[in-house]
Image: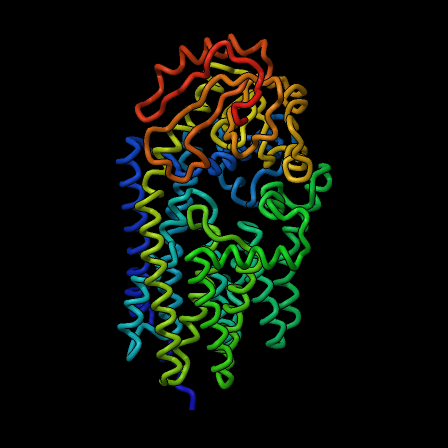
Length: 532
């Protein structure tokens, strides 16, 4: 006979696991913020991408969807997140990502603890394991780290845990509650990857013989995204945001779908976090096979295995450990909830060991990554992209071209040409499909751009043959999560070079310690063999 979990605890007993997990998550989040502030000497986000969303929110408040006034573009991977960052004219807007992420970290911790309690870890033989998972889960599943990025990933993680807890309640007693509905709706709106878990839940609801409820949930998951796609198409844009297309298209233009999936899987498995996700996915698949007599455990584990496999095939791992966050939460949470319902035998002990091993390994990985890069990322961002933004807005005060868009575009009244393509469909198309030498020359000329600030190794072929190299903004500090340690300044029109050099000579002495500028030799001629 299958040994199932103890009944759900009463509310007083629910508190310790939820409060413990939320406390651990918030405590680690506060530690990360404090240490990063100490390194930088001020508050700053670790990623330039945060400012892309702030810039889009700024335009939304003015009746436009994009980054530049009067130009509709889709530079954000999240449909909802820019809408959560209003008040562009107020200083409070810059701190809204911090506020939302603080709330998301607290919510994710509490939901993780509630999931453990309702799975049966709150009392009896499982109580000690529940306390261990309440402490280890928020750290190993990177709840605080996702919030530290300032992006939408922590909110997506909270929506994912709400979805999973709602699924557990539905499978256990047939209730379709507010958490399930909220998770199905909000997951895809926060991140396109959220559509996968939402559709898995819809499939389980239909499988349980609830067709009307399943179709209603399907509409909640799909119709808002369909509406956003219709909006993009009505504006002459691609059906998916440029940021999504850029991730899907990089390095895969000439490959078949099978080759792309194989390449994505191989790339993800080359990452330690990808190995941990694969381990959790295999463990969930094993539980699904072992739990044939317990439909709740079997359905939970099957959903977890499918979500993990889907992310390994279609998603990404890394770049400040944020892309895999929701998948780890869903698979790890589903596995934990299912394991407690298995009979006490060697199989359950082995699968529990796989969960503990994955969480312990992820804890070491993510804390090592934060120590090596994360704690330095706000400082590096301040020393590089914030200084680029300061020169563009306060000295140059004219259209510019960049390949790292956010900080320069936010609160900038002048046009910003995005050579990476998130805010420029034509630049994205050329970069991915026709990267001929000098492809950005006519784009810059059409927008009156006379200054480009770029990572040469990112967009080297874009640089025009007659662009004049002015020098490079350099970094004398850990690089954090920057795309490069040097940003090259180019005059895209040789006639503009003297004025730009003069502006740089006045600007360079105002750079903060840790940032420097190396001028190119004068007279600077057209680019020839300097490596572009």
